[in-house]
Length: 60
Image (cartoon, rainbow, N blue to C red; front, side, top):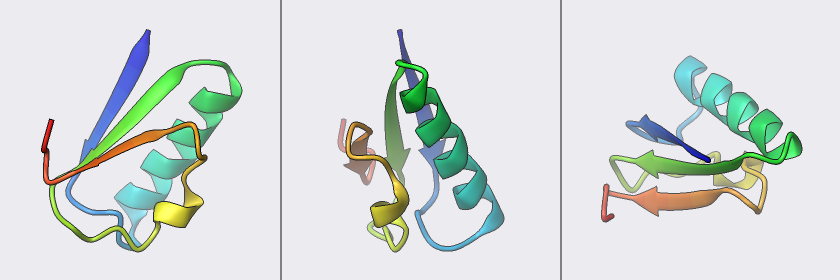
């Protein structure tokens, strides 16, 4: 199973912080996670665990 989060940006904000926290926790539990951001803004990228697949601009 893979869970996908679709969010507007990875800029510092409430939605982004919650999505990152949830994605990182799911990775700890062995669930595959991908994050799709609908812009080029990825300020908080470093907060994502390395196992999380990140797509920008909904390229996929």
